Each structure stands twice: as C-alpha cells, then as structure tokens.
Length: 193
Ligand code: HEM
Image (cartoon, rainbow, N blue to C red; front, side, top):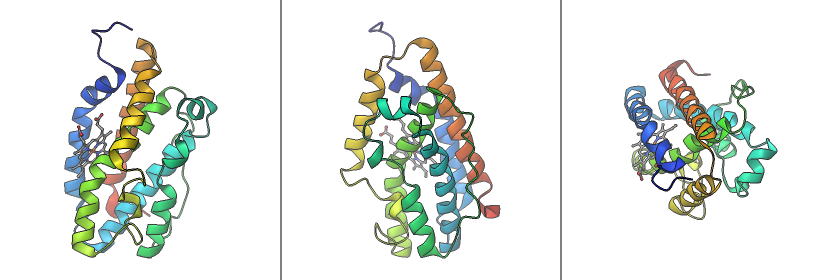
C-alpha cells in the first residue's frame, strides 16, 4: 500500500464523521435516556441492530478475518436487558441478507465503534436509573477485556488486511449502510416494537 495513503481505519473515521454527528443528534432527539420506557425502546433498537450485524458473522470470510468474533456482538446482552425491562422483541427481521463481503466489515465497524460512545450512555443510565452490567445495561457495558483494547485490536485487524482501493470503498459503503440502519431505528424509536 502507498504509505502516504490514509489507512482504511482513518478513512472510515473521516468519511463517516457526518454520519456519526447525525447519530449523536438522533440520540438526543430520540430522548433515549429520558425515561426507563424510552431507554427500553432504545435497547430494542440495539437488539435489532446487533442481530443485523451478528448475521454477518456467519460468513466465513468474516470469521477468518476477525478471529475474536466470539467476544464481540451484544444481541444476547440486549435480549437479557429487554427481559429486565419487560420488553420482548416481536420479530427477528434481518436487514443484512443482501450485504456481502467486504461491505459487511463496514457494518461491523459501526457496531464496534459504537461501543466507545456507549461508555457515556452506560454512565448516564447508571446514574439515572441505577442500571448496570448485571441489570438492564449489559448492552452498554464494556467488553470484559475493556473497550479500548478490543477496539484497538479490531482496527489493527482491518488495517493489517491491506484491502485495495475498491474493497476499501465497499467497506466504507457498508459503514454508511450500517449508520443508515441505526439512524432509521433511532428515528423510529417511539414506534419500535
Ligand atoms: C450519544 C451518542 C454518542 C456519543 C456521545 C458517541 C461518542 C463517541 C466517542 C467519544 C467516540 C470515540 C472517538 C475517538 O476515540 O476518537 C466514538 C466513536 C465511534 N462511535 Fe460514537 N457516539 C455516540 C453514538 C454512536 C452511535 C449511535 C453509533 C453507531 C451506531 C456510533 C458509532 C461510532 C463509531 C463507528 C466510532 C468509531 C470512530 C472511529 O473510527 O474512530 N456512535 N463515539
């Protein structure tokens, strides 16, 4: 790879900044942390998004590239949280059936990166509602090894794979799709069942 060219991970960060900003606005507008009821709806959105992303883990291209998938993914955590919050998902609607490799890595990027911002949300729901890693906020808790370590390892894996220009474009496209999906869930939070 051309050494003066940006790495895939720095491109992902730069080229999805506007989408990230949009997520922060949507989070505010959704009032996800205003009440336990609204937080439960937010947890439902997490559950659906995590199911979308974890579906992509089934592709051998993905599991060969990312050997520690078993520590990633939070749908199980979100499902347990939903039970604590008295909600049950009504469907398993999967929106990622048509997502192919390496676009799928962009979706996984969105999911893994969101664990960083989740640190802030975790503190908030702990302070407001007393939720924690054993009750109702498992989906926002850090991975057992710590958020930063698991994120750094993910970044390294993707950069070390040396994807060519076309593949990088596809991964960025996948990340845009992932942000769009989560944004749609957030925008619809009140109606989510
Ligand atoms: C209140 C809402 C949010 C806040 C306050 C927040 C905050 C943050 C922070 C502080 C970082 C770390 C930045 C760094 O270390 O350079 C981060 C990274 C990231 N967040 Fe969020 N975030 C929020 C929502 C979301 C959502 C809803 C998603 C996606 C579904 C998301 C996806 C990401 C991604 C992909 C990264 C990694 C960026 C990179 O490439 O370094 N964030 N966020």
